[in-house]
Length: 232
Image (cartoon, rainbow, N blue to C red):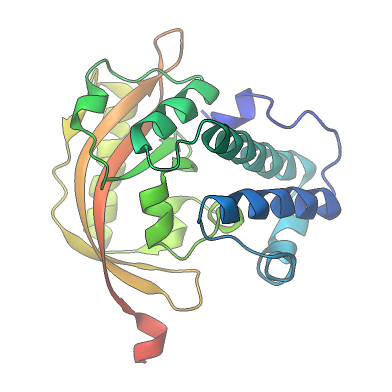
């Protein structure tokens, strides 16, 4: 299930590139206020215009709705002065996304964890500040492809990740420790293709208000190794 599609963060009908550009500009202001990486208008045009214009209106609306979610999330974080409180940021995101975590989930998440939420289609719905500070992808860029197209790793590990995601979305009732061994991963669609050592922590189902498992959360720790393009 595409979680973002079911919540109307972006009520406008327009899905033009100018609408997308305007929303990215508003996000840029918020990102700068929160010391997060962002793209200016020239970067948005050069790095995502063609991708955006290649989408049909339904998929464009999905992107706009997703960016609007982050605009609302970041506005909430700024308004409540929560830039240094990762767990409260996560609670706000869960509330906006109408997701319910297992009751003991927050007890096993630490401030230095990278935290990501994915829907059942493999699209990242949420990334915390720790994750955002590590990777090269800006917000608009990370929405145009599932995670399997954004990062390269050992294919056997990718298959095991699909298995754990499936477990979280079907049979799991609470969080479980990931069985994926530490490994090297690198960015596939960025200029420098940063390379990281990654260690997964826990994987957890996230539920709708009706009790259905509709998304999953994963924690990890990332250590930067090198920029592959610079070393070639």
